[in-house]
Image (cartoon, rainbow, N blue to C red; front, side):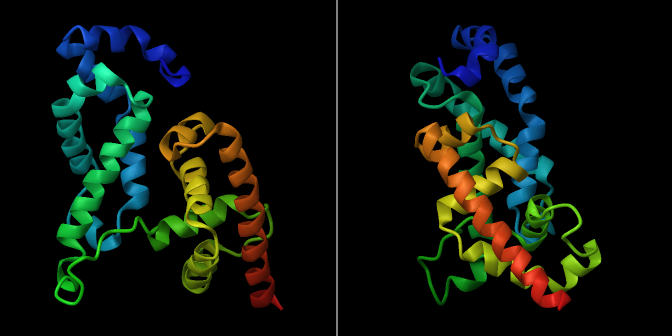
Length: 210
């Protein structure tokens, strides 16, 4: 059993024995974290059509259908497995509701998990040193494009480490499970990405304030 699932041990054992109440409790314990993950990742065009809570309910239905297979193999700690289902559900929803109009030009286009502007701004606000960032209004109106440009300069997995750590609040161990890498690799990526993004953002702020 993965270390992150130690406190879930009794529930997982009950669920493995077919207790539906245990299945339900496993899901409800992670409901808020899952809703946060969905809200962080939702494109504004999708958010205009669907509420994160409704999407979480769809994810729960997916999880209930697949719970027996999960409990048999337990390929990931429970929350990273649940998050993986959330990612798959979000990809389907983005492709159905957001990318439909683009399919005529590119039928192979898929959702790439790009961070919405509001989430990018929230990440920047958490990473900038106190006192170095302008007002929230300035961030939202003038730095939006620059924040996205800074994020685009990071390697995809480095960027994902920051998003999972600071916006989704995943532990190092959980991030390692999601990315299928060692905890040491996650720590190295985290430090590298944090330093790089802070440097880029502070540079942009300096240009604006000069």
